[in-house]
Image (cartoon, rainbow, N blue to C red; front, side, top):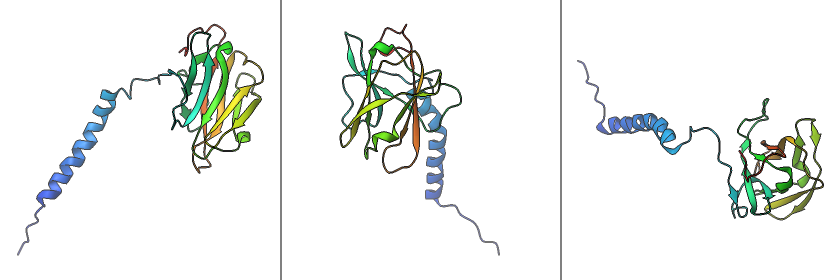
Length: 172
């Protein structure tokens, strides 16, 4: 005697929902613009209250504020083509905002053109570190190497370019 296998109606509904989700993810990515390429670097008045990351403090004489830099979770072999561009006269400092802020000595700014370390002065608060430059940055490509937020031992890398010809904030 053969026993018939029956598939539950709820199992079919669940399978249909999972299938619909899998096929809708690419459509959601296209609809939200997640596949449109470069991140948008925008000038903000100040670091958001729950801001997490690194922000360049900038001032071009008419507008001032902060621009958030976007991280990579690994050090890149090639400098990213979508890194923002700033005039050296506009950069006033670097603000790091994180939960569980780390020791300021674990945050580094490198000029990649000559592999030099840029010295920074640090003022630490419970959730932020304000780094001020000891001298204006020279034209070139820069990388910030910093710990990830929280209790992770991982690092993240943020890139930007300094170019004396850049005029607008932020220049892309």
